[in-house]
Amino acid sequence: MRFPRPCYALRTGRRFQNVMIGRTLRNRYQVQELLGEGSTATVYLARDIRLNRLVALKVLLPHVRDTVVKRFFQEATAAAQLNHPNIMLLYDVIDDDGANMLVVEYVEGSTLTEFVPASPEDVVSFGRQIAQALHFAHERDIIHRDIKPANIKVTPSRQIKIMDLGLALPREAKRVTAAGMIIGTPAYLSPEQAQAQPLDRRTDIYSLGIVLFELATGELPFNKDDIPALLLQHVKDPPPLPRSINPNIPPALESVILKALEKNPSRRFQTAEAMAQALESVYLREDRIVATQPTPAVPTSMLRVMLADDHTILRKSLASFLSEQDDLMIVGEAADGNAALSKALEVQPDVLLLDLNMPHRSGLDVLPELRARLPMTKVLVLTGRDEEFYIMQALRQGAHGYLLKSASETDLVDAIHKVMLGSMVLGTGVAERVITGALQAGDALNDKDRRLMLLVAAGLDNEQIAARLGQPLMEVVEGLARCMNRLGARDRYSAALAAIRRGYVLLDELQALS
View 1: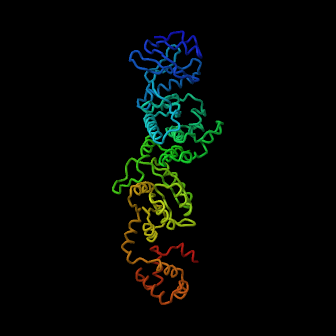
View 2: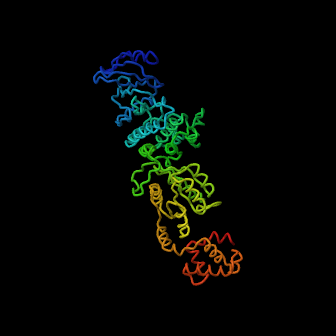
View 3: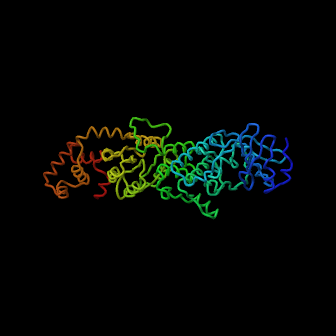
């Protein structure tokens, strides 16, 4: 059935809207009232007489360009593939004698804009529902490209409904925008959109991060009035910490938001499903530890990881790799012992990867204070030192694991999860040395003997050692004999080599004496 001609003769503005009210389209959709209007389309409330239900009619205005018409029906193509409780349903498409309209689910409620700012509980609930809906769309090769509060409705039962799929892009659809054209709402654009780069599903994850930031804080992370300056903020500027604006935000929720807002897509959540899972775990008890539980195949929470290592290239490459894991969030880095302690106290990570040899204060030096002041933080030593002394000292001072830098990336990720679950992790080559060290614990050198062997290894004779230590010569001789016996050495030279080999005498200490 063709559309009644009068509604097309009156082409624009209020007259166009007025003639629509009260009409019955296709002998089925009875237009009741105006719901909203924009620059390209008008939305009406109508009743579907055949099924006796309310629907919304999204009617494209007659004056719009051909590209807008194409995008309008692209929305229909996208929406037709999506049947999800958190996505607005498409019922019908009308393209009849110049009349272009979509018949969609009528959703009661308010847009998400009305909920800004929201409680952390609502941020988690709304964010999880949006992420689950996006995952459903992404699995069908559709990205939304315009996630923002105005495009999301909340029903009276607090169910999320993602609306407007006008910019959604099915995999098989041809782009209807010019190359290099920026499409979307500037305040919620991803860095890729801001630079007119090719997009994938992670662009929606960034936009959702902006939405959750605004919900949680009442503010946008980037809010320049000038659009070019705003786009540059998306590309260059780090977002402020949400908890600096609203201290009531749980640290775990802040971590989820910040990971979603990573500039580099590879450091964001790689799927919306992973983001939904991270949101779902925000209110799980942070101190859950089940020592016998195996590492879960699917992450149950977002782990906040900090790295302390003075080798910048290694530290940065590790940070980049770990950030690509959906359940890990890098919350801090440090290049020396003092900075490691202060940064860890500031960010309170779940897991601290700690190198031992660092400037100012070594990892061994700060480890006891870290354990005393941050009892909930798991410390995983990640070092190149495999001497028994280093290993045993680190474990005695409270490290939850000891891993060599030669370990694979898979082993490192696995170790992070295991220490968080309460397991002691000893990397390849470390466990054997721990066993050896434990067996030899009765023959271990104490600090006094270590100092003696250090001076022997430095080339001092007995008289010089006695003078340096302020001890009688006979006491030095007796101490040397005791050390030779414990180390199984036949002379002072062999004892010095054994002490170095087993880590009782460190090469750094020898260099400091020279």
